[in-house]
Image 1 (cartoon, rainbow, N blue to C red):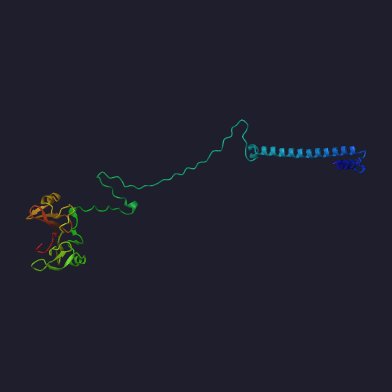
Image 2: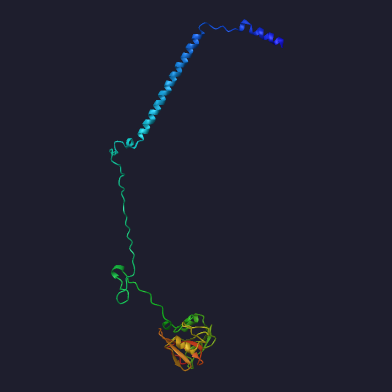
Length: 267
């Protein structure tokens, strides 16, 4: 430890380690400090000028954003003391007219007036009203009164072979798919089908059939007439025909449809 102290003392006392300062070193340091101070002042002045220029540009930009400055020479500005009102809004009105055609009111007689053929060009006709039960044609299934024998056979409702329907062997009789009686349908060579027998389960449009009472038939058909054991109801249809309600005196046993104008003696 003592040797280290001796070595350090010898090292610090060596003249070769002494720094010799020239006499004017103080003036040189002062002059250098002055030069650095002047440079800092100049740089600070430049930054100040730039900052002021930036502030001036910003204020100019703010002034230009004023609506009065942006108006320019082409847009008039409001005078002092006069409120500025927005220009009036132009509104266009579009009117749509819809034409609706309705039926004309009934005239004084209760009916509709005649259509104007000069404006429509054609006359509109109403569909005919549905036929009442008394005005319906004599039809049962695919068979109809007055149908020719050939057309009746084409329906497939008749059961062949036929049998004579009268002694003159003029008219023919057939059973049908729903009525096994050999005289269910009678056909005239001239008038066509003149009689059709309905099946036991069939009902007329007024819900009358086999099993109904005679009184029920007369109630349903006020124009019914008694003819022996049968009740006859004439239909107002073309060609004319009648219902024949065969009975046992109290209830209906068989219902037939008969052509009024027929030429078969047994019908």
